[in-house]
Length: 286
Image 1 (spheres, one colour):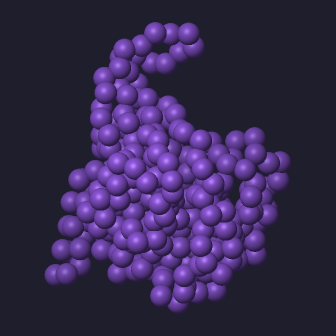
Image 2 (spheres, helix red, strand yellow; image 1 turned 180 degrees about the horizontal axis):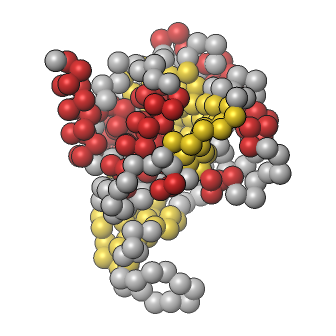
């Protein structure tokens, strides 16, 4: 079991199920899919909890009924919420607009500034994962690098992300830079970077390093809802690395987690992933 800190968003997702694909100027009917737990914090954290790790989430929610619900739901699922900050005001819902073919459009509120406090004592932690625009995230990462594994998602802009492993999707990188990808990743992550992992959906993922590039295939899946697939992939990758798997084997494990996520109707990983991890734990215990 590893001790893992996630710096990531915690959302109350509101699912709107449309009757047909979106197009400009159209009129649509929707079915309200209700509230559900979401955001990178929950989508990444739950799988890691199911895999037996201790997971603490660093995030921010409003001081309102939705914020209360988020904290209660997240802690009930086994994620340590003691580092989640409460801010004045409402916690706005994240709207997930889902079309019949499983594609989704995300309509998010403008997030207030979230400033991280002083970093924890990293000697107590095995991994730090950053998927947040919180102020101070780069500082946290720099202080953590000598003590634990640091994994970071590429930000929407070119802000620095000091880390050992930088994670991005091919869509995130499209038109982003004219530099070779490894050189660009080093400009973001710094000299501590060991790997850049670029996910490409059903085409799998590529890992870049100073030694070149290697592709790891995706696991075939029946797509129901793509929400949270990237978060589940990140969780599987962190899990594999915390088990001391090679980067290629960790990516293969991450592909399994992502496949379970897209086959689930929820934002968070579904019960099939939980059952898979329970079976793995039982097999290792024999």
